[in-house]
Length: 105
Image (cartoon, rainbow, N blue to C red; front, side):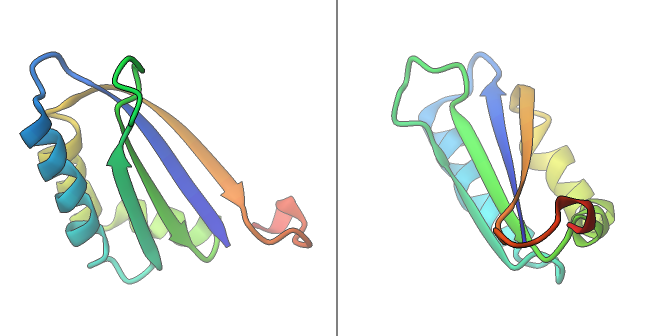
């Protein structure tokens, strides 16, 4: 099981209302993709942080993650929700099964 975590820096001018809309949109849009098992998104409680928005996607494998990222719904999500409001991202992929060899994730 893979947990795909992305931290985002927001563009100047993105207000709390827009950030709240991003959190809601992320959850409702990404759950339409069959390969995605769960979605989490939220705002950083530390307002001084440069990474104010995050999302986490759970998928079965890196192959399933690649399939999800190639899905038209995901691409449209990036174009409408993420790219217009963010400047930078930092991506992490974590294997959640402690016994699984990382070569087979």
